[in-house]
Structure formats: C-alpha cells, structure tokens
Image 1: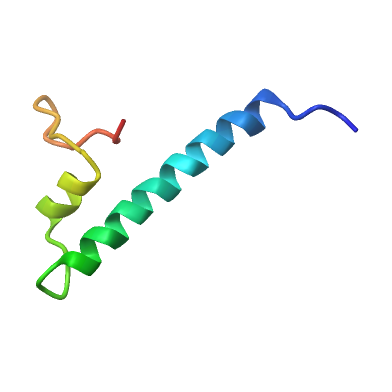
Image 2: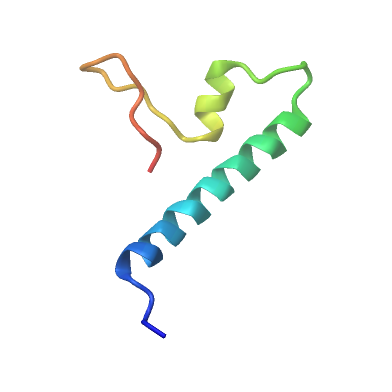
Length: 61
C-alpha cells in the first residue's frame, strides 16, 4: 500500500478546521436568543475581521 500523500494530510487539517468552525457556529446558534444569527455574530464566531482595502472579509485563520 502506498503511503498517504502530503496533500491528503493537508486536506485532513483543512477538513478538521472546517468541522471545528461548523461546531462553533452550531454552539452559537443553539445559544442565540433569536431564530437566526446575525451576520455580525457569525463573523465574530468565525473570527473574521473586515479587510479595510476591499471591504470584504478575508478567510478565517
């Protein structure tokens, strides 16, 4: 059997980070008073900060 590729390992780290962020969103949603999370609250949970140059938020770290 061939050893796992570096790409697969990198993809695993990305997948785990995405799963963690989804979990954080679910926790925030279950604790929210309203029916939906506001865009500002979603950005806060995902630790997104506005990009001053373009006015578009960059990907979370």
